[in-house]
Every structure is written in C-alpha cells, then in structure tokens.
Image (cartoon, rainbow, N blue to C red; front, side, top):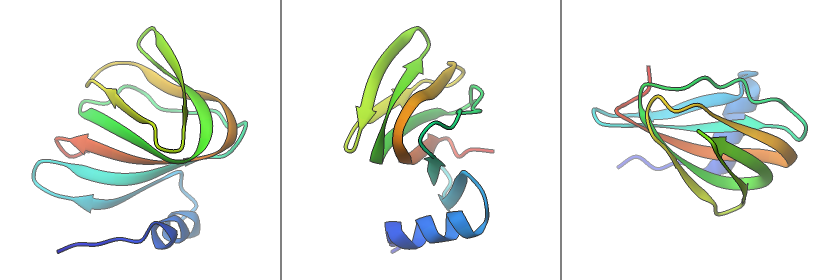
Length: 105
C-alpha cells in the first residue's frame, strides 16, 4: 500500500520551489499536487493525457476549451487530453490534486 498525507506533500512541494509535485507514478496513471497562489497566472499548456483535478483548497475559475466554471474545495474537473485549460481569477491560494492517465511525462 502507498499512503500519503496532504500536509507532508505540500511541505515537500514547497521545499522544492515548484508549483507541481508528482508523488505517485504507476503503469496507468500518475498523481501530483499542483499549487497556484491567489493572483498567480497558470502557465499550463495542453497535456497528452486525460486529467482529473480535485480541488483540495482555494477558489478560482477554470476554463476548459470554451467552457468556464468556478471551482472551490471539493470541486472535481475532467480535462480531456489535448484540450487547452487554465485556472484563472484565483482568489484564494489553490491546491489541486491532479490525476493523469496514462502517466504524465
């Protein structure tokens, strides 16, 4: 079994000065923690994998293709492979768990 604590993952991500920390990689998926602070711009480009975002904390809007919605703690968003997407109007520091399938990179 592999088990993780969100507070420990956030500390590791912050210590590595990165917005993204991949903490699990398996044959069919990878999982990471993505962080954007309030007011920050999301630099993402479309990925070659399907993604699921689970918002752990924070508030923002996300645009996927031509659709926009507001997200907050507990929101889940699916992004198909190759589709442009970005978080924006981040009003509270955003922490998002990201599942890629197949594994990212």
